Length: 367
Image (tube, rainbow, N blue to C red; front, side, top):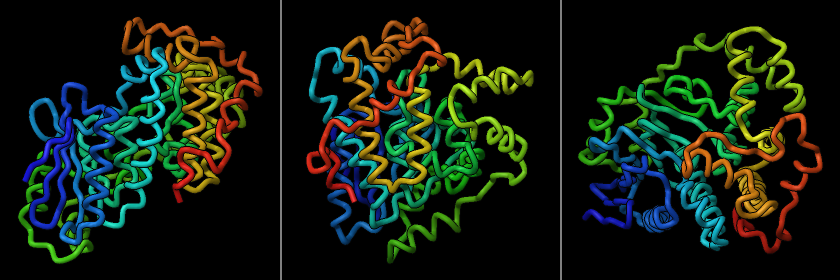
């Protein structure tokens, strides 16, 4: 039986639970109602012995697949922040709790990461036991472009990418394709997009006897690892050379002293991002490298609170970044401070001071 809960469709067929994000005009961007629907569905299926595994996909504009999830609903963030709406706090607490539920889910959770996979879309896919990408995958954590940081566990999973790829992806918001995602450990296998419906249908029609059989079927019958081992060795060395440097200032100085096309483009991208959040993000990723997932999510919950409340309303770099990108669409955010060189250590340190004592933290129950 197909159930529609706002923009999330869920059904059990055979022994597998199927979830389709069904908000294609918004590239399946997550609303609070969608987060609650996903949490309720996954919690129900976790305790249902008849459900052996879960598969999740997004609805594209032309039908199933073609888009996974573009992130959280940033227009809602903007509106709620300006209105002082407490639903903004609920959104992040419940989203991060959902991310943790997926990372720790006791049954195979198979994410079909076709099309756009950004921000919150990474949050509901990086914890999957099987992460499938295609030639259409466009993956990124582009939050510094809106004066935010790569949340939803971004500190945790980006910091565990090879070398300093995590710092590079987090600071620049660079988009990568499916094969790159496999190489960087952000996907488990590559599949041509035309084969995705075949795999989905096979999960419906195959008489599985155990959870392990479902995962084995996906990994051995359909997926191929098409990452080419040598495709990015030069790029990795280049990334490590710059993004292992100790600070945002030293990174940008080194890039701007280098005449190569890649360095010029990378420096140009960084100069467009929120200077304050670049410093926060570098600290976030490097702290997260030593953290467990619950510790990272609690840190990110602190960071997102500070992002909206250290300078409330329109004074927030996050609110300003969303305004410039999605509201007024002038693509000319007025960052404060306006230059990387003007950010002080004290400005950064404020973000990492939790507004809650440990016993009252909204994510205290994780782990």
